[in-house]
Image 1 (cartoon, rainbow, N blue to C red):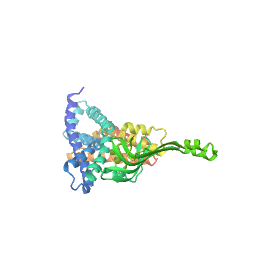
Image 2 (image 1 turned 135 degrees about the vertical axis):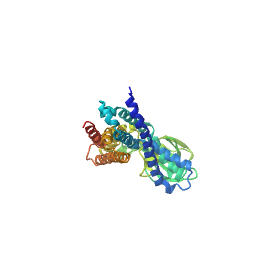
Image 3 (image 1 turned 90 degrees about the horizontal axis):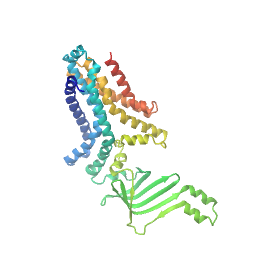
Image 4 (image 1 turned 30 degrees about the vertical axis):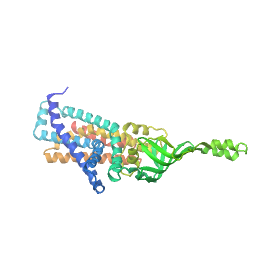
Length: 377
């Protein structure tokens, strides 16, 4: 149950949190706009704002820990300067007790960040690239960015297309292939068009070849050869009409394919549950498992930074936040320090110098330990 003291602290903290979050989001969005402005000449303002809006969920997950630091350091620094913190301590209220409402707020923000990471961020990050190519830079023709690339589409399917039909917004010279052990199914098509998570292929031919059965051709007699050939060529499907079409269900939508493979700057489109499934996949290679472990644990550790940074921000605010300017500078220093440690530990994890879990959680453990020691001092 909230006491008068809890409500007073939240009245001081929440407005600073909201303003800081808006400020940091605005700074990040301006950075995206500045980097992309050279390609946005003549683009409608509403479309540019929509594109920036798709960045917001992902940016919010990144900046909330920074906003939490400001929301603790600035109000508590002012309360310490005005003697409010000393007065509460004189009345028998410890710093640990002052933490209660702010820690609760940190846990709420951590839960909110986890919800965004699972349900909102993957789709919005995918839409960022899809909207960029399909609405802003090459309207309706974003798929041309994937021409000549081999693109894994999920469900074990790989896509390649050699050309692009601008008039019909279709891929041309399409090849889909699906391997299962030493057996491959290859679909060739004259044209391919995305329909949600489906690919509609026109002018298609399907061939299934079992390479394991080819070895049997070497020892087959003339009488056995026809039957053995049927074992090699499991399926051959060539429709009578050149305009015949078929629909193949794939794992990635048009936006997700663009987000993952259009350029090296694409944002992460994996949800928390998808990252866990990839991390626990028994078929994953050791190097890929390290990357998957870093991705999964980072998606958990960063939202929990909303709680950890409360622990270290409060003692710094109380002991050193003697002026608004100093408090603001200190909040930036703590936030930047956390992200530097977080990224350094992740880099060490990627190089194999630290286990993935420790690399992702290292910054949280270090800052929580230092913060708790300062509080108990």
